[in-house]
Picture 1 (cartoon, helix red, strand yellow):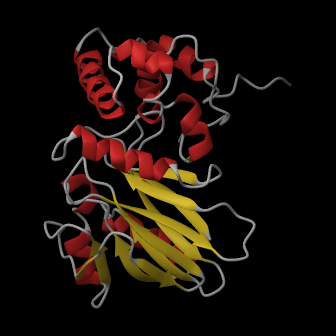
Picture 2: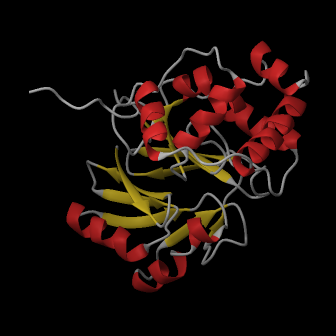
Length: 273
């Protein structure tokens, strides 16, 4: 299973997942269809389906044009508001694309019909992959727009039970700002990112459990920061604090952001001759 990470729009990611034996491919969250089809052509694969995490414009806007360009293409998701949806998926449903298994995980909170997708291959040494859309991001999570804090907590808790080696492919490049907030929540947390380049996806679920405060709502420092004890209440307080954090102070200067990235292992220092 090969995953092509495709940055689009301002800070979105769409993905092309390739089954390398059959050369069958599945796209996730198509925002710019012509860009996707360029890569499909370059890779020499057959695009058979689109998995859409949720109905928001920046994740589903490309579906109608792609469906027009590729008649018969399956457009799958859990929300009837998704553009050009051909079949609505259910929680726990499993799909198969060549050797790739897909488990559909309903993860409401950001939207009521948000679906995350867990992909793996049997008897394969490569780790599984999670396409989490705006449910879970690197060091953060999406805003709770249509669900309750309890729903979002349950969604994140379910994702957190997946194998720690699972690679997390999220919907946006918000890592640096997420890490700034995580540092505020847990200033004594010494766990750092291992990657040495951007884009910062994928992370792994094991890493996320170490430094993502939204997966650490049972940890004492996170509870102390929020002043809450019940996990869903901790999560709700974290979301409110993050909103204030994002709306508050001045954004960091580029030099300060670069220094933070170096400290968290997201960028390499300049190479030596």
